[in-house]
Length: 387
Image (cartoon, rainbow, N blue to C red):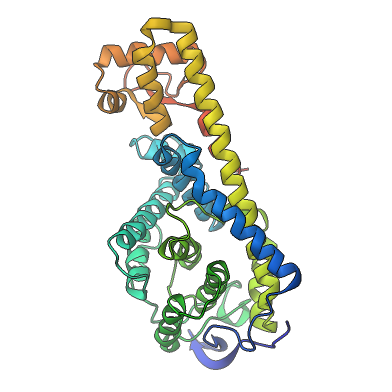
């Protein structure tokens, strides 16, 4: 539906320039959304796919195994949208304090994202409300070190920002003046919790655009805005675990994503954006379910191979295999902690997995060696490769 612009313009100063800054109207849209026909069918398909994703625990023996690396994949993808060059393997090595040849700032940025997501989820588990205070806390963690740490972490901006262009006057979009940010974010917080019967996926899709339009921080808005989608769904009880991440979908269709955000602001056609967003939910949820099934098959196949080739002596190798499932890039001391095996026993078992092609040694050294579960990593890393 073409509603016209969904806000008003205010003249404000940005450096030495006067610019027209856009202040969005509070949600929900007016006139109300038209949820019928193809959009309703798209909503139903996305909701069904999300339900299957929420049942993923029935597919994985231990869903925390999947979550550990899946959360990190999302961190890599969301940060890549902002221009980082880190890969999933880079991040996992960095967490072992070993990142040879990797731009450290990039990996720190991705690591911060993992910490910010975990902080938000932990706070929700403590029954802390999804609120502007929590969003500021998440932002503070996100920019706690590395790039952006000088951009007022945890504080709504007190300066005018802009999107695209070398200067405000050439910008593709100018968000609200900083003086309007508190009121805009207060209205958005009320929308999170409105008891109006709106489908949870519709609410998440609308809130994402509104947050990106307000752009309340000096840096990190895109990453926080993508985190917000998952936090909204977890907070609503739609997802028991944080398994839905749209960054790969947004990355693969980046031009369309940004074009639709701008089109909503110009024309008020929320329905077109929602069709794109809901299709992303469906595709992403179905992809996560497929990935989980592939991982279950790989884990079962590799375990069978270990038992077949080693026989009665397979106990230690199975325990090391379990350690690799939990952490697909590991050091031998870490394996010892996870398995309670002695260093010689862990080393011998790992060598057996290397000989079978299940594990791969990464360093080429005889000391301080690191090992990767390649088949697991190759599945999870799909879409995160840096050209």
